[in-house]
Image (cartoon, rainbow, N blue to C red; front, side):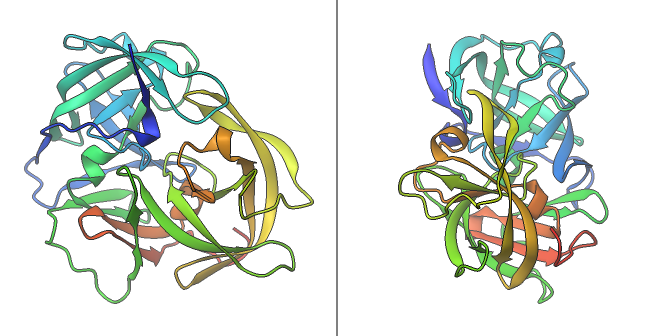
Length: 305
């Protein structure tokens, strides 16, 4: 049984995507607390609800809701151990190395399908996550104002000047990193190296512990942040004076802090950017050119966030 860490695993497969009749590559989406929910089917299963997850850095998808797994037939499944955020051990799963699934009428072939075998996520409003299968092979435009995602062929889209271009960094996997700046209390601005986790509902999680840049704000409140593949994630709710991303500034931002060893499996991260921040902008992810374009949408407000 091979151990796998979800947010730090890249599987080299010959993946392919077949577009449907919609040449613009449009996919209607739902939005849940800023997170993007996509309709999916695996063979005759479904409909499934998948979160678009930038932390899933390989071609394939993960099904975690046991209410969905009974309808999924895996080809030649093998046991896997898969880890992620949380303070416990990795989760047991079954994995098929090369299958197909459909999202919004588009077929994704030669994909890894992982299905958790425990009941920790029973009753969740979503069924699983998908990431690099979409983000790694297309320029992905996310329009929160119209609840629509558009897939463009790499090199075919040139955003106009209403978009701000931000550099993305990819380290030892296919998970995007970006730099932001935060101000705690009356202190000076602190530049942070963060990775993007679009499956997380928080705006930002500040990672604490030995060697981390950000102290826990004095008026922090203990909270259960959620559930990861390695168990529950505990942290603190806090408020930061300012958050700057690109040229955009948010004031009095509700944020969270958590020990780095519990919340993050990404070495060297100062923080995690989640859907609570991303959903205030329309987005264009261009992995091929290492950049993210952002433009304020109808949910953007400078204060409070």
